[in-house]
Length: 594
Figure 1 (tube, rainbow, N blue to C red):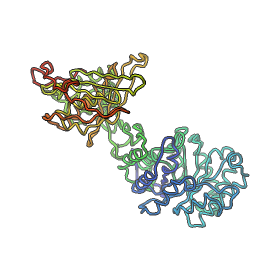
Figure 2: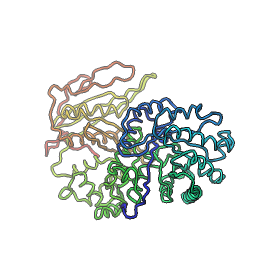
Figure 3: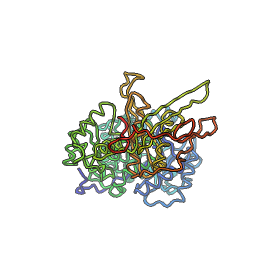
């Protein structure tokens, strides 16, 4: 379904982003001053009409942010400073919080106040009448100083359930004091959608019934504790709300806030409502915006996030894959291109021939005349039954196809390897790996120290291969993941290792599986290096000087020491060619056993 322009509602829905304030309340999410400025610029460039920058009275970082914001050119956004009503014992002009809000010099000030008598009497220690005065005085203070006032009715839905008449009286106080927008907040995030809609409608009908009441824009602010934040926000819009507050990717306290990305996409693609930003902004840039904010916040993107997640349009089941191959929209509610994402067919034991063939073609491989797609699918099912998982390691999947091509010759073969780990007399742990590698008729024997067995094995492999493929100097391991596949077997369990690698221009993932974690790691490492050689079109080029090693970092507390690069690790003599390591038919090394 796509958005229909017919019947579009005249009053647009205005989006108000609270990532820089609400989002930072999420556990484990910390933004530096530079981070906040970068995200603010991205939101402004995207077209977000309102950006809440933080609470200037709460911490020095937010004070610095608003100072920096005054020197920035804002293309589309109005910046808002956020804070609370005055303290019950303070006059507005003497209240430090209100003074900081005005000093931030933002065009918009958002003030939250209490709607729930529980908070009024037991948290603030105020009387109901005092709370109404606090709301009115605070809003009047910022309005009189030329600011656009937004009022956030904190805990409104709980307050309404506890005492409807008092909750509504807090909104009247804010409206009469000059609030331009009144936002109903489901602060505890537990209101069910049908209840929320009924309360929103009653509230708007009751307060708009007075013909002398000043005009106001009604807003919604929801949390996700019942996993209804997006649904509740959309339902509120359907009930007449035209101001929606949310955070990018739903970041926020406890279970998070409403997800601005999903709200924006749903409103733009599935409703007739006009939006500010116009058309929902650059919908094609929505995935980039989501992932860029995640990257800046140092939070791993949620692969399963609707619209923008890596798996949002991924098809793993065989029936699904076969249908998508014929009609792409048969298992997709929107075209992923509309939001800057892409569809994928996942190669796994659950997929069929269509998944395997189409995914291979997406990666640039034609199976026709190379390997039967049905047989390849059967092979994948068997390999996954043995512990492999191609859906998380597409480089290994590509290598599987390549190894079935006529004339394939492996660029190297691991003849054998040894890994030793020792810790004596309380000294630092020491790991050493030795590797015998066959490349183009020559066998090299290398050794390396590392901070662990896999690190030592990785360094030793690279030492040998760099003698022939200098292009591997730029390859780096960036992530290493281990999964226990049969936990009931305890320490004898089969493990799966997935390694993520990068060379500056591309990144890829490979895997290995074995009951021995070192063997599984060695398989994944070997695949990673072979993939790098293949994709970079590296040509075999011996380094005659044989100074092909790189310095091995010393173990903690130990001086740097040299180690022979090839041959006997004790003498440094080059190893002799092992005739058994060469394929007599092709003159090239065979592939390592899988």
